[in-house]
Length: 99
Image 1 (cartoon, rainbow, N blue to C red):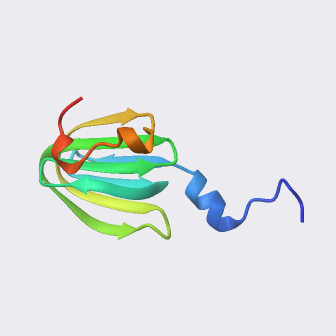
Image 2 (cartoon, rainbow, N blue to C red):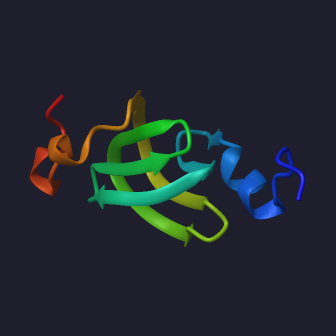
């Protein structure tokens, strides 16, 4: 097998896009996990690092980790990326909002 060969499944997960439609609907690809969420924050693990989405009335609408896609609705106030942390440094659910 060719060492440079990337399967379609791996290729889809390697891509990362963020589409924000009027601050009311967010469509994200390249998502590997949803680590926490409530109506003011959605925390995602993506192929480009951790992504925190903050806002109000946030809801995860469509979730397909097999395809690496997530859709979030609500009023988006901001998006923040950070690097993946070591297992011992992972944030718990109650650490949301603490930077």
